[in-house]
Length: 68
Image (tube, rainbow, N blue to C red; front, side, top):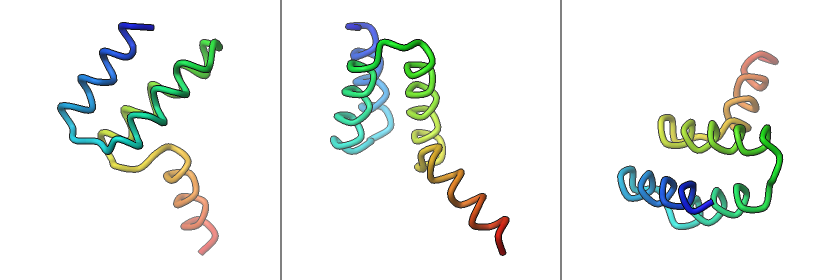
C-alpha cells in the first residue's frame, strides 16, 4: 500500500498531473482489494499519463467514431 502511494506520488510529481487525478487514482487503489481492479487502475493511470485521456474516454471516442 505504501509502495503504491509512493509510486503514484512520484508519477504525479514527474508528469504534472492535477491534484484531483491523484486523489481519484489513490482512493480507487486504496478501496479496491481485487487484483483485477488494481491492475485496471494501474493501466488507467499509465494511459492518462501517456495520452492525457483515461481508458473510458478512449473507448467512448472509438465507439463514437465507429458510428459515423
